[in-house]
Length: 417
Ligand SMILES: *[C@@H]1O[C@H](CO)[C@@H](O)[C@H](O)[C@H]1NC(C)=O
Ligand SMILES: *[C@@H]1O[C@H](CO)[C@@H](O)[C@H](O)[C@H]1NC(C)=O
Ligand SMILES: *[C@@H]1O[C@H](CO)[C@@H](O)[C@H](O)[C@H]1NC(C)=O
Ligand SMILES: *[C@@H]1O[C@H](CO)[C@@H](O)[C@H](O)[C@H]1NC(C)=O
Ligand SMILES: *[C@@H]1O[C@H](CO)[C@@H](O)[C@H](O)[C@H]1NC(C)=O
Ligand SMILES: *[C@@H]1O[C@H](CO)[C@@H](O)[C@H](O)[C@H]1NC(C)=O
Image (cartoon, rainbow, N blue to C red; front, side, top):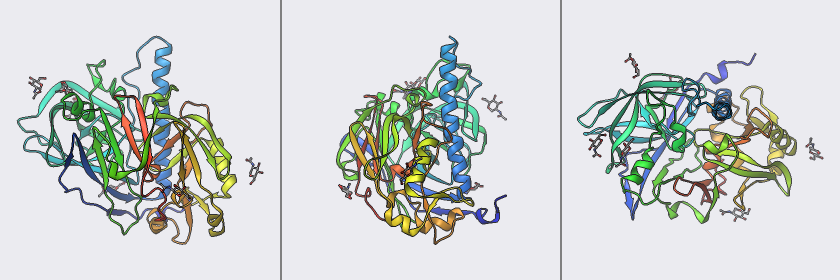
């Protein structure tokens, strides 16, 4: 068995402050957010990412099977997907009620229910209205259940949404280190999460900002930066528009894939090659997911990547490992989507070396953030571009036009890892 002592050390590192006031620029609004590092070991990280991937796939299949059999998907089945207590999370501070109590919510583009109560208890105020619905969501290796409320939600210090539907957990499992989730996925994922109302979808925060006329377009854009232990990092959510100070060049938009189950999420078609044309993944469907840490690719693609790089799986922490000679030869990975190729540099494929010890690794080793999805291509969900990808590329989740945007940033070629 693997030694457990090396990855039981607990680390909590808040690398940012979210107290900055919200910026209202033209007709869109931005919300800065923080990264919290709470690592119990990389093996845990890999397993959590894979559990999430499995849940995402199962979720889609359950619905597809139900449709094929002419019945609605069972409300008791897995109904939506989110993150569990992954090693590192990005959280935003969100106010609820009037006066507002602030909650630290995990930013998740892979699930769509917004809820709180896992950490800090819900503080009811005069704006809090309990609905007649209960709510329950099953995640990869966690879940919550409770009661659906409507309340005033405040993003940053000034932007308010009235009558936002939110879940208030009275029980949750496997979710620690934050108070709840800010669900930024497609609204469809909220179906069947309420009871007895099993037919309504729940408008997301972005939907309500749009329907209340606060923002002109129903979209949210996400900016991350690569981080190391010592640098302070601010992420930024922009509702209703994109922040041109956060990306370079132009944004490539690609329509949501037609392939199930990826099409229930922020799913896109993408191919991946290594160096000068070594095929890793032929064009196929997968998802862009801020709730996943690593870049997970189908097993056959992962095998090709291992072969191309010479990497071996580290038995202790579960990440791929390369030697410094192999790192000198490590080529870029090229992700092609929507007719544009995005270059993930050799440095961007590394786990930040300054954070090796935090995941139970050796400080002198070189670990990679590409990992195994757990099944071969052809399953309708053949990759998950987690936030290690999003730390290098600006991303836009556009409900109005049913598309995902990606752009390079000033950190795309950073050598911070
Ligand atoms: C938790 O919420 C559910 C759904 O609203 C409700 O049925 C249950 O009674 C609540 N449990 C507690 C202990 O409050
Ligand atoms: C909120 O919803 C309730 C009922 O759903 C309605 O009576 C109230 O006017 C709404 N308030 C606002 C500010 O939209
Ligand atoms: C906000 O969303 C709720 C449901 O969550 C909906 O009932 C309400 O009409 C929305 N408010 C506006 C103004 O769009
Ligand atoms: C870190 O994670 C552990 C378990 O994974 C949890 O018990 C703890 O509350 C978390 N700490 C913070 C500050 O998030
Ligand atoms: C492994 O890589 C070598 C070149 O480095 C290539 O010739 C070989 O076909 C690859 N094998 C597989 C199974 O991809
Ligand atoms: C990154 O570097 C490559 C050359 O290695 C260059 O072609 C590309 O334009 C750079 N990208 C950005 C966003 O600076």
